[in-house]
Amino acid sequence: MSVESMAILILLGSFFIMVFLRFPIAYAVALASLFSLLYQGLPLTTIAQQMVKGISSFSLMAVPFFITMGCLMGFGGISEKLIALANACVGWMRGGMAMVNIVASYFFGGISGSAAADTASLGSILIPMMVDQGYDDDFSTAVTITSSCEGLLVPPSHNMVIYATTAGGISVGSLFLAGYMPAAILAVTLMIGSYIISVKRNYPKGEAFSVINLLKQFAVSFWALAAVLIVVVGVVGGVFTATESAAVAVIYSLLVSVFIYKGLDWKGVWKVLDVCVDTLSIVLILIATSSIFGFALTRLRVPSLAASAIINLTDNPILLALLLNLILLILGCIMDMAPIILIATPILLPIATSIGIDPIQFGIMVVLNCGIGLLTPPVGAVLFIGSAVGKVSMERVVKATLPFYLCMILTLLLITFIPAVSLWLPSLFR
Image (cartoon, rainbow, N blue to C red; front, side, top):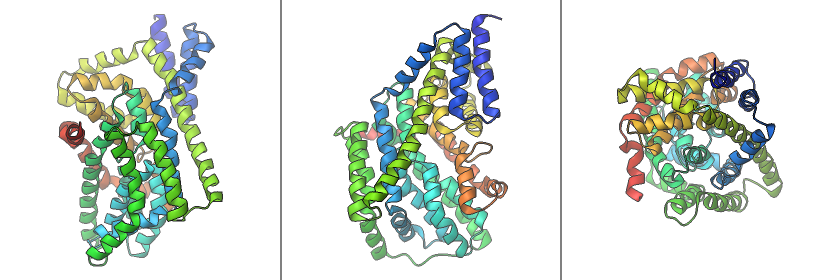
């Protein structure tokens, strides 16, 4: 066996062994890269250089700002206001609280950009509320965790910034715009699934629709929704870079949370910043260690070898597109979202572009695939959070989520085979 082949075996073999042994993913990535590079005779300084190179990117500066913005809004008392707005929009339907859950996730996702934050924040309010109104606890939890994935697609999403950087600096503004329609389609398919189940189980309706109440709730929630408007319009209109818009949004979120909604005092702000630092440290460690892994993969020509192997299986673009989704879904079952984006993008993006998939469209596919992965055992972080918040066993939650998996897969197929779903808005504003 050649030195190169042995180095690849060490890199990938040790990585997957550590993943299945439930090592923290950052350690698994770093140690696998370390073993492989040392076997090739590279100095340890190379590892340090690649880690620094991985996080010294201007585009990645937007990530801590978006995380801080989401934390400030999430702790600033905005959840209840967005739930009230969603209730005014769709609460009148059969299974109204399930619809409220889904629509509220669309609104909240545009602020937090995190499925875990969505599940923890909205779930702690909506799951007990739904159970009190006669909904089954496993159904309530399943609706909460699946709708939380809308937040990964609705901008501003720091995962989209990570993808844009990893994919070679594609437009963050175009990615932001590309997420709106897929997130809306995901919301509609989840609402259809919820409605069918609600009719079968005779779940209750809410109060009758009122235009006056809708306008009133919109006026209350406007200040929160305006944060998203600042980011998206600023980036797309060329007023700010993604990083600058994120910094402006942090200042705006701080003012809204402290002075308008008054959900935070200055002591609470320091606690929020503490949570932000914890979250950011995890993200940056993953980015830094994944940079070493990416360097090792590139040095050993793994992306080109993988691309050749996959393309040799079939030259049918439809089958290749399905195969790409399958690979991402399998990775989502065993890895967290950021590592998948950082590791899989350099390998799979060339294959996607070779069969006519636009890099922006592929970015949306990656994000949704990773979102589904967050809901699947054994490493489904959002699944665990939902189970804990709803006080329902994971087995019951997975069983209740099965119909919603179908809704999400349907949305994924629409994104994969109808490019306009994700590319229409970016092309309109381009």
